[in-house]
Length: 174
Image (cartoon, rainbow, N blue to C red; front, top):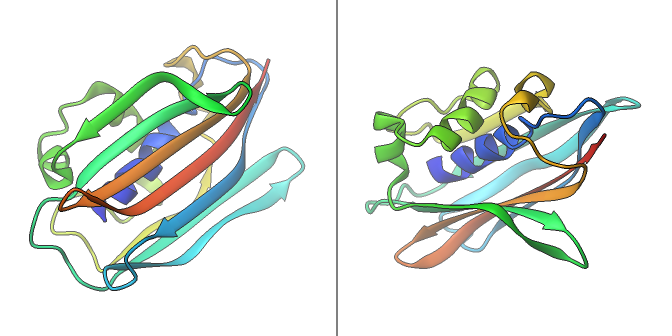
């Protein structure tokens, strides 16, 4: 579940793009393949203003896994469907990352979420939250991405089986 939270943070980091135009969330999809492990209690976008959208995600952990949770985060760009673009990051243990913070790209994403989440270290809380998260416009200087439609797919696995997926879609206009 920490991986899910990490993915949400990674998605927000992707918004750290060098753009002088508009950057905003367009959709979010949350899926739990194992209802005995996790349940999404909230997964939605809120229109605050015409060009401002906030994301809120809440995940309730029903049963804490005893084994490490693996995480995969992909950046995709829309071009006749969503195709892989630049990043495909895999971590075998989410808690290990939270302790060491040893991946620069993931650090940028995680830091963009830090003020909007309750996930900081392991052990994880029973409910993971990202509340009222706006596209981090100030972070857009770190990753020079061209304008277009993008998606960040985050997948969390346990015992080599996908358990939770979070897909965040956003658009960048120059």
